Length: 191
Image (cartoon, rainbow, N blue to C red):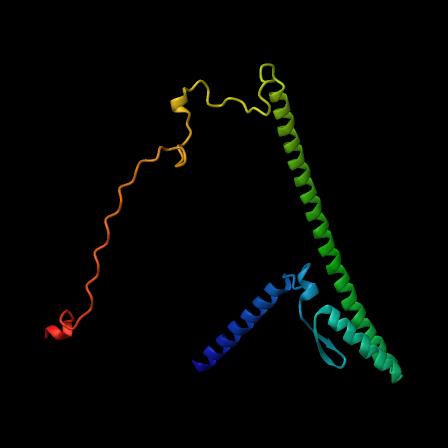
């Protein structure tokens, strides 16, 4: 019975790992856009791992390229140059995407501002035509009468404290003086 369990366990383990591998195949593991510029990478080069942002990795591989050239190691020099070129291309592509997104955002902002300007101009011209209506020439910058024919008592305005008549106030009564602390009034003395 134990042989059967072991074979089942092996079978299920191998099935699980193949499923996870096939799921991962379809995923795009390459990061997109602007976060590449500041993202930290682990680059496996011929001399071990190089860690840093793309710009730092490019500088490191360029330094390794120069060192290999000085030591007349053409193979490693070419390898380091290719690594630096890879990260240079990756950084340039990410920068293009960032620039493209920024340009799109600026264009949208310009369009929104142009729309706001048009609306403002339309409101201004509507106010101009309203102020040029005959009969309103004696009132400069008059707004249309939205209250209608209301009498003065029902103007819809709120009364402010400055407008209320002042009533005379009653004088305050003086405070009672506090009793002076003496030995006879303390709780300890009462016990």
